[in-house]
Length: 162
Image (tube, rainbow, N blue to C red; front, side):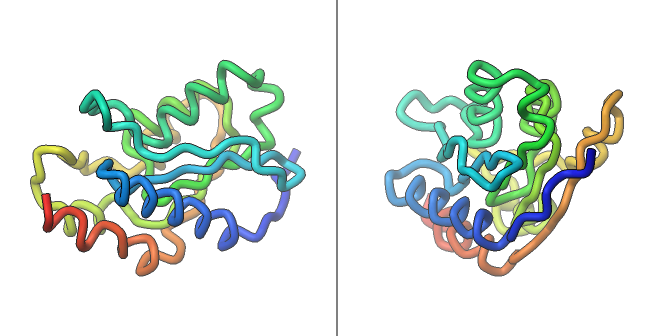
């Protein structure tokens, strides 16, 4: 069954707002939104690096974990994960294992790496999420990068100030 056609810009901009709020709270500027097949926002998640300095507290991974605890894969196959930045290998894997059917992201991994350099709090993997997801046994639709300049904004000032 094809996934629904949603206005990606609305949900991506919501993810950007969540990312900016995470940065304002002192955490890393990443945000994610899970949207059901009917366009209903099912859950939102900002980066969870703080308060425990959890390097695995990526917004997408935490959201995928929460989604897999609340919904079955049969429910998530029509859902879309909107992410302010391209999911890393860990986050792409978490979305895959949760059963999420589509990922839409703003800032590409390569653009993020260009902004952050080799920052110790963001040792970016040079591995596109498509490469991770293409190795799975079920398809996950990936769309992005979209609105990349907007997606980059919270990162430009955040990583310089760290």
